[in-house]
Picture 1 (cartoon, helix red, strand yellow):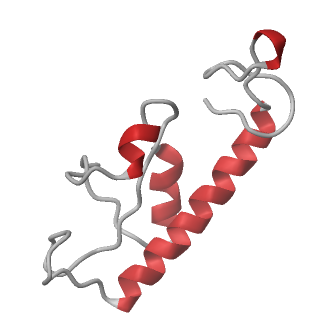
Picture 2 (cartoon, helix red, strand yellow):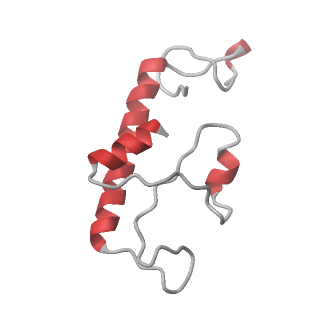
Length: 104
């Protein structure tokens, strides 16, 4: 979450409260395996998944830049930590080795 929050701020966005998403996004399932965050663009009115939802271009630009910054920062962090490796080379969440692909 901290990487996403820092990326949002660097992109010029306002980091509001972290809120769980009501709809069952893919992040709901993958979040059970690895830390997961979603970046949303500001909507006016502040509603989601309704016909009146509208995000101004400036809000979309901030969200897209924040997403790119988040992905870049996560990849840099993964490169520093190395891949999670378990017995026999199996991937085990939370364990670290050398190279790309780890998570903290």
